[in-house]
Image (cartoon, rainbow, N blue to C red; front, side, top):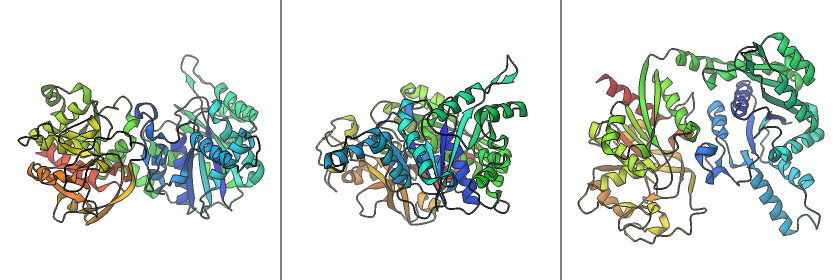
Length: 541
């Protein structure tokens, strides 16, 4: 029968519940158990799709087209387990479902309340869409004490009561700060956090303590005594050089042993951690360095491009190279000369996805500099569309080529599908149908034989994840190709541009999809592998 592991966080936010959840899942998967990981988010948005990346971080898209929390990206990267729509829920979705049922009369006239109706819906989500998994790991978003998290905590309390201790495990992640002025670790924040949980009816079974440095047995004993758990159940989680050290750290601290003891499972034979050990060995021995300028408008928060960071990191390791990222605010390079001064020292230029006209000029300038100085260029989603606009605007008479995302234009080279027809440059500027108009999830692309991207993938057909509303208007196919752009990846129906490249440049690639969403430490994405290799080639010239 499936066993459920619930992970909560206390004291402060951003302690790394997602990394801990992913690491535990990885260890269990390496023990040959079947695992699912889920995220329960307490915010009222239906999903993070409309949230500002500068506040919430990136939106991670699943194969089946769900816009989800960025932690699902960690889950996939650490385990290789493909996440689904059913692996992420929000308070908004829960309340929406409850209100639909109330309107339909499903509650038979009952007064609809948080308990039992909302908590019942949460429990249904936790247990829904399972297929004989040995373990389901549920990360509860937010911090214990937040008012919006209370229904989720109450739901998992009820599940412990219904399923019993032998089928449920509570893990609480807290902070144990070190005060240098007092030369001691302070356990009081952890005590208060656990006390808060106890007041809600939840006694943690394991306590994971984030700390800057290893604390002594005295502090550990104090936590054990006041938090009412055994000494072995207090597990130290020191700061790591990289998040990918965490699985090995947790295993070394005996987490699996405590987990198996709790569930009364026989200890597995020695877990094979060679995959992680080999990856980290390469990380510690990197011999070369390249720099990549990421030109975007959410550069104030690196987590806005979390999957992108990780994909570059993975492919750097693959190429035995440290990748240094230089964040460039596109609004600060709207002068072409300034742009050249800033970007000419970088080995590569990357323009990622984004929405809206704001910051566009700086991104186009980055593309111009890439072409002028022959700097390897990768444009992702919006970045690919801007590469096409920059190119076609150089044709006589097409200086004003634009996207309907920016407003009315006489040359709608980029527009929503319903604004154009194949081979017809029709234009109906429509901003009333934005909701639900995204192309989300995994789609197929056919690669042009003999193209650069064909040699990168070493196959003729690929599937990649999309998240965008606007498309390349295929009615401008001839003009796009006249401008020097090669359409090297097309949708199976021949209507949608998926990949572009240039033959007059050493490495220039644009993709409509988001390849970073499928990169993992053990299987880095081929596009990023090729990109980093191109940067190394440029550096050695």
